[in-house]
Amino acid sequence: MNVGSRTLPRLLSFLLAVVLTTGLSLLGAAPAAAGQTGMRAADPSVIRVGGTYISVQSVNGGIAVRQAASPDALAAAPARQVWTDSRNLGEVWAPEIVTDGGRYYIYFSAGRGTAHRMYAIHSASPVSGYTAERQLALPDGEWAIDGSLFTFNGQRWFVWSGWAGDTNVEQNIYLSRMSDPLTPTGGRYIISQPRESWERVVGNPFINESPEAIRDPNGQLHIVYSANGSWSDQYCLADLRLRAGGDPTYVWDWYKSNGCLFGSNRATMMAGWDPTLYVNGPGHHSFVLLNGDIATSPPAGPRFPLMYHGVPKGTAYSWANRYWYTGTFCWWGNTTYRRANVPGPTADTGFSIKFFE
Image (cartoon, rainbow, N blue to C red; front, side):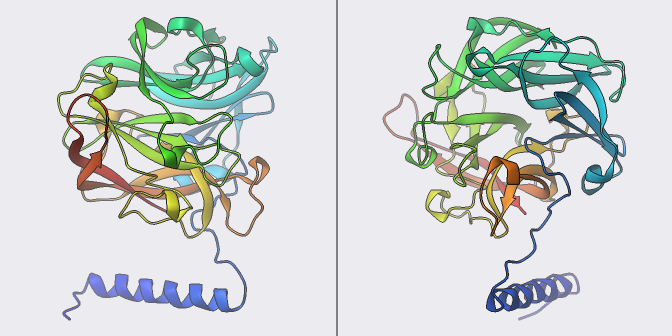
């Protein structure tokens, strides 16, 4: 076997990792969690603006922003509170930060029980000067969480997780057009429901949530989301891929991965994808994109930054034990997603995504 000058260091690093992991296993100790930060929190949202990484999180009954020179350094950066729940809206969940037209927009869900709805604040600065919250008038006005804005083919879209009606039976993924960063227009369109066996391992309710948009090297739109309940180590990431030239509002133009692409249980993983080594229940991720813009999505080949939350293996799985993790992702070409008993072609081949701890 010929081993090139670039391959040899990688091979040696791999062998060293195997030796260390094996040694730890023999000693009865779990390997250190790769990428674990000091952030004991959930639902990371991170963007890059120039050389600065900006994160947002729900904390102290409000929303805080951090800035650092790398994703790993965010945990040590000061948390600047940019919004407080002065109107006592209730639980504040999963803020998402994006940029649009030179302004920073933070979208978040607030409410109690069935009252959760999407809100937004915005500012010219990432760390100060945000407006008062404004509720988004999403079509149908139902329960809504985990919303985020993106632009695809010149059209702004809002994507979120919500209920079909007033009953907490299942959380679906919905899209709506936006005429500007604060104004939904037209109807809401369902693009995913948790109906596959691997995303119904835990239920009451069944879950599709935390959708994140990204554009692949062929220009096709993907919505990567979390499946199964976040209270379980079955939590994982899966992919929706819009067929080439497809209509984002037409559910049958979306093809779903045939299993989890990033998860900790082999039984639910898509064929060819392996479970995690260091964390349980990885999910609610953030593609760390320049300006948070899917037009800056990475090309095929290199790995790019990722943040997600999970629980270290060997630790009791609970919401309180979730940490932010840094990882990477890359595009994985020539991947076929298959489906049955639906209109249109039963298979679609294109890019999928590989995730790395």
